[in-house]
Amino acid sequence: MENDYGIPTAPVVTARFADYVERDKLSHGMALRFTYPPYPVGWVPRETLHRYIEGNDPITGIPITQEIDDALTRPLSDFERNFKAGKRPERPRLLEPDTEENLHRMFLENGWTDGLPIILPTEERVAEMLTGTDRKPDEYVGMMSVTTHEERLQYNVEKCAVIAVMAGCRPEHFPVILALGASGRPSMPSSTTSFASMMIVNGPIRNEIGMNSGLGALSPVNYANSVIGRAWTLMSICFGDMRPGATFTATTGTTINYNNMCCAENEENSVWEPFHVRKGYKPNESTISLFRGWNVIMLGMRPSETTREVALQVKGMGMSFTYLIDPLVARSLKYDEGFEDPAKLSDWVIEQLNPPMRRPDMVNFIVVGGEMNPFWVATDFSYFQTISIDEWIPKTGVKKDQKPLRMPEPVVCKDGSCGIKI
Image (cartoon, helix red, strand yellow):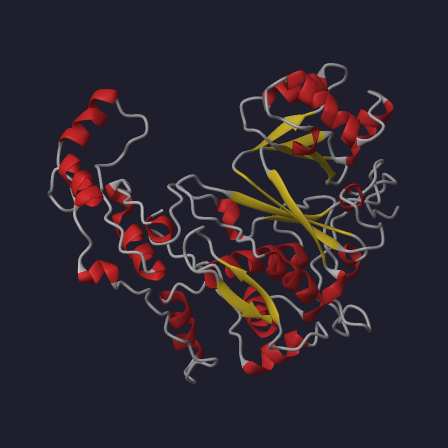
């Protein structure tokens, strides 16, 4: 308003975010006159809010009403009229050589990690990671910021390779990492609430790189699931400029942020079309689908009234739902309850909840699990987008190690023997 139309404004932001706002003014070159009432403003009596307005700004000590009046009426100073945006200093491509211990300390103390040990991204390791795609190292991939106001930082293929190395990935995982980077979506957006994120991989690449979609798919029992999910977190920290208290304000945070909810869909044991096909892709295309929300709850499956019970249990969770359902549940829903496809099930869930502003496309179902028990994982996660992985895969196919790294496969006892020889 002030910059574009010359209309005086008096922005008001609670004192808890004063430092954030002052940095934001510098990055955008806007010398706005902010007023900072006390904090908090949520869940406090109305009388307390009135006292805030009648009192002083805790940052400046000036009465709140006087500060707002001055912001609207006092002429701009020369400093305010000529205020310029600050410039981010350029960072060198390479760090100075040092001992492994000192470099690990540098990454940790500069906030370039998730607090867990990383693989140091040496030139040799990054060069090896780059063999996982045909794209040039300096080719643009995307831009990211964990906030909606701060500068979005730009990154290329080489920088994505650095992240992939740090997370523990191999070149076979790199096309998935590049597709993630191309989304421009951080896994940890700045909010006082504590967002969690989820990615679901579909298509042939799931099996090519050994992703888990079955037993323990969301547990730390699979190499590809773990490092790909972690890479998204490290991207958010390094590319999204995630700094606790500065650009990241989740009041409690969530353990899901460590490597997010990352797995493949169990297409082989699903009775429905794969999720990416429902979003317009072909079955033989490889994709990632991204989701974000807060709540995750486990629900059991029982006959007849179960589906209605599941719908009612999530009624207060939010406006969108994404259900991860075991193949046993999917089969029961289709053959016992008559839901031929997820679209019919989404329509039915909406009818049961009957709230305003919900649409069937805000309720999604993905088949994940090892058929150990008929469970649902119900979330209030919103679906954001599905992105192609194929465009990042080399023309010669996924670049695998001579002996690909794999964790032990879960023991599946479908024949009842569990591998026991008599």
